Amino acid sequence: MKVAVHNIKGKETSKKVDLKKDIFGIAPNDHAIYLDVKQYLANQRSGTAKSKERGEIKGSRKKLRKQKGSGMARVGDIKSPILRGGGRAFGPKPRDYSFKLNKKVKRLARKSALTYKAKDNNIIVLEDFKLDSPKTKDYLNILNNLEQADNKTLMILAEGDNNIVLSSNNLKNAKVVRASDLCTYDIMNANKLLVLESSVKVIEETLNKIS
Image 1: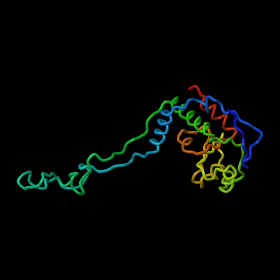
Image 2: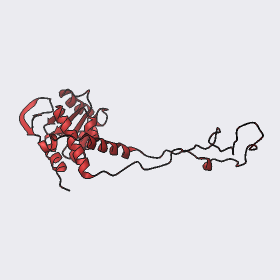
Image 3: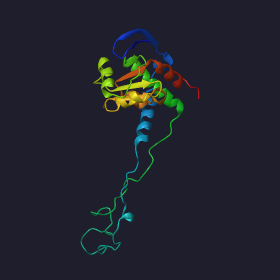
Image 4: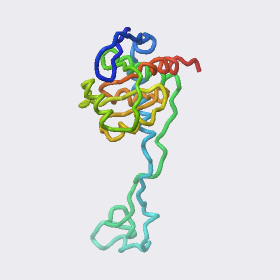
């Protein structure tokens, strides 16, 4: 699939980039996308939620009243979960929510996500560019030129560029990642992918690894 290359002024250039079918034109696998996004979100959870059970509450273990003869319901000690201030029954405990996912499944998920973006014409290929210094205004101007300032955008770089990353940090709907760090969640979460010309090759090399 041939895609026109744009410059940072928002104009199409005479150059075109070929997005390979085995990356941007496969039969999408929705379940692979689901699993990869689920793993990403699970890995973000701290898993530190904790409540005290009756064995961890300070208080007397004395039975509050006789078992029978009071005319009221049976009750144990003051730390019982049914009493105010008592321990919580079956409360949350610290746990690890992360889980493993096969590399081939993760690779299939990223290819499927990129395919959806390509089918919906939500990929814009940009000429490689550099910023002289980290300025939010300069990055915002690029988005305005591309008419993407109001959309969630994900810019994909071939390699790290501190000036571009810092320029985007103050913009709520803008994110910048390296092609080698691309994940399914970021792709699906963005309305538009701004792919630098040089990063197309890196994406293809990363997702076509045999191992």
